[in-house]
Length: 114
Length: 113
Picture 1: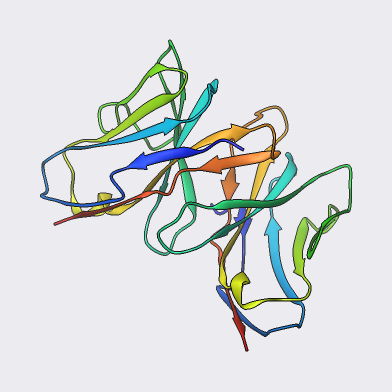
Picture 2: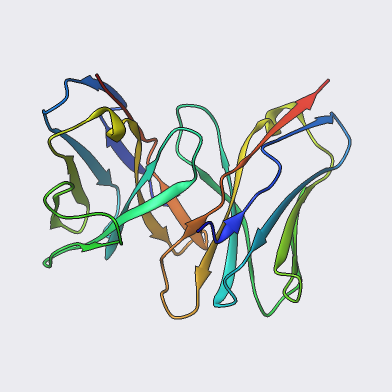
């Protein structure tokens, strides 16, 4: 199955600043997905990132707040911009794993905004 | 609007016994279902899945049952082991979207000795 390296694993950030999260996959994948898990909540899809095109955002998420880059088929970044304490969450990237039949996730980035 | 619900936030089971984790959904367009296990500080790990054309799928100690008419699925773990202690999420994919997972809120399973 695909292996995803996600970093940073955690960070504590000041409100008003931005944090960029990186995901590197060990194989080429068409789509990468970014999720958020707020405390005590389920995982919610933020956007789908395709290489060579703009990311597709889910309802409630906008590009200005969560810009995404997808420069090639193995790498993507998610930036959380102008952070507030409400952005404190775990952020995860994911790829479809055809071998497994499911989706493989990165280990997550635990973000705390103070 | 929570389309996938796991009404039990936690479950405690003795080692060797059966663990049954439940999941209900409301969207009749969901046709593929997955279960994930998540340890602290790690991403979710895929466990098992089931297509809506089946009512049961088995993989080792893990069996998923799907009752489409009741919009209900369950994950059975037999026998339960201490290493199974984790948070379990069910997830669903609607027809035609190929990749949009909708997750439940998770059930924390504790397997005791």
